[in-house]
Image 1 (cartoon, rainbow, N blue to C red):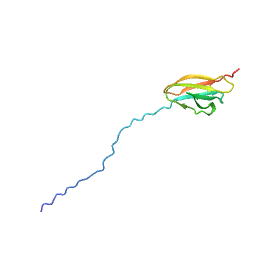
Image 2: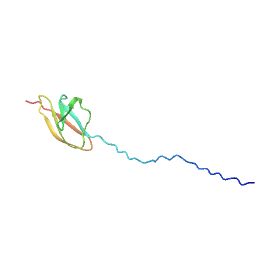
Image 3: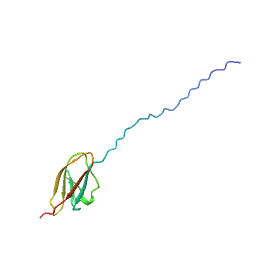
Image 4: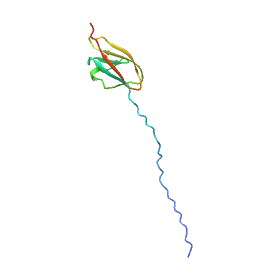
Length: 100
């Protein structure tokens, strides 16, 4: 029997995708939750109007840190406070008193 020539075969596979583990950190929203009376009062944070009490989102998002908050309504004394926002939403409950 005659010697058969050797055939050489090369198989090329497509490159495999690189798999990496990715750590996903859930960012928790933080800010202030307002409960204000009267509902028509305007709420200000750091000198900026954020809206009327009855129209505010459940959470006014703010970065952590110290914020100046005031609540105003015609015929009522203005309420002011310096509020520390941390890593959790901070509840703010305000009832304005009528001006004499």
